[in-house]
Image (cartoon, rainbow, N blue to C red; front, side):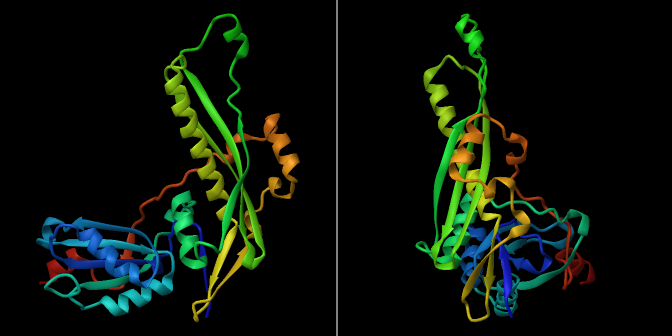
Length: 281
């Protein structure tokens, strides 16, 4: 049986584990990551102190990209002591409120981590097609000596991701922007420019990865498919046409200014929560 892994923030309930019965210890999240990452790449590991009614100790929420990895981790770690004296309690989330299942893009760093895990460091590559300044500064004002103290920097970047072993290529476009408080300070302006360029390139890379589906087979092999549902009008343009559109600013910038973040959800699990367990004792 195959499982599809996307370059998105995991929101599926089957990809999330609740671990409780944790003892207070330095580096708790690091210990959890070391144990559970052996079963597959992790999106996040977050440890929290128990509510007062549950007594001393901690619980943790661990998010995998793959539900299969989460199930294997749950079966292997449930009831085991691992890095502490008392056994861990581990369960898989069973349901999640539908209205909170907002699909969000992974940031570029996590996209690269996921690609490296499933495809290998040499299994994919990327390149910048173009990086253009689309700030639209008011040159007339500057010519008249009315230099603006505060400037708004905007860069638009187009990136291509290539997976030659699978014959897949995708493009992404991203917008980076920031305000420069003191536009007359050359150092501040150069620093802000580099930061905005890096942000645009990161968003473009993330956008390109959104169009890729990883099909993970039971034997560990991975196939790569192009996700046509994420196709954009710019995907069918030649490089010169894309550069020209960006240069004359004929693209709608808003469509490329997307968020890369996680929204916490209300989860319920197939075993009792720590608070419920404490109340029943």
